[in-house]
Image 1: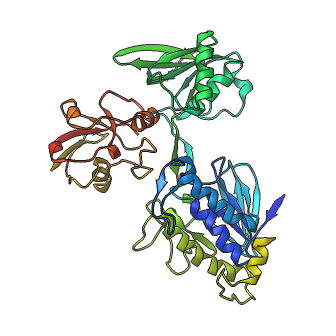
Image 2: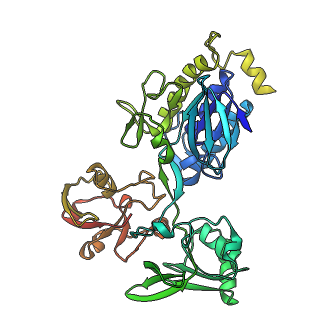
Image 3: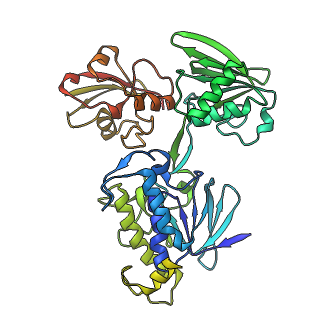
Length: 337
Length: 102
């Protein structure tokens, strides 16, 4: 089934969220796609508790507060969020509309695409050791998609954050789990930490102090992980390695859409913030133009101008009457409904 | 002030530092291969460097935030630091550092 909307916004960071509002003012509906499991982008993922000081009129606001407020501001326009998925492919129809396909095989149809993808999608950070690609997804799992695969297996989980601790606790029920971290302190939720320590105490899991030094595939379909702790090295044979070293940002499939790029940024004009392909826009940190500043407030400005041009694509026969939100009866009706 | 950097390929670079900047900003603006994804607010570990031993004492110590962000870095050593957390000062003129693996 193909879901139809006016505009597909790629990226649910602050600029993508504000784009919903600006488009909504012009009666343009949106679907929003993001690879994270929650809206907010870097603000929610990297610095939810850290203060931002340069949002106009907000003397000081945390990344999470800003996200929550932008979500509330966009809510009256009923955006549809598609989280935990990345846009894989786009194709243009004869009607000049776009079909967008996500990594969850979701298909969306829209008149315009707005790329508000920041520094790209958040993806798991991989181990920087050469020649591991062939083990990726087979013996080295950066995400667990199928738990049953791990039943009764010997597993080494590496990391000290929530993902590492949650999977240690969860998989301890079905597998032989060792958790390795460089120190015996964890930046995970206190509940998960105490649960893990309890499991270790009851000998349901092992804890190992150390870091990955090297990984090789051994003959019996196992992995030989060399672990080092200070100057001491030991080999460890396991069925699966689950490293959790946080996330990094990658441009991903967008790089292959035929847009004019400047390094990893998308070139746009400064009137409409449209890319080299008509009806595809790029706003926020992902775009590039002379004088660009990577600030949230620049992205907000870009969203407002982008929306003006989207209106022309979405309502080619209608005149766009410029209105302030303070005096628009139409808008007040919408916000109060 | 000078900053001496060894990159991941073993090439040496001598950079001009200034006391208004962090070490990360100098590395990034010299186009060395350092991601510094969060822009310097100690919210990622992509500006990880090793400080040459003899300079360690001259730098103010790691706080808890930095120590926990280093959990996301690879091959963390006792000389590991996040370069965004190091404010440059004249004491650090000539500091020698090495970029850690990505």
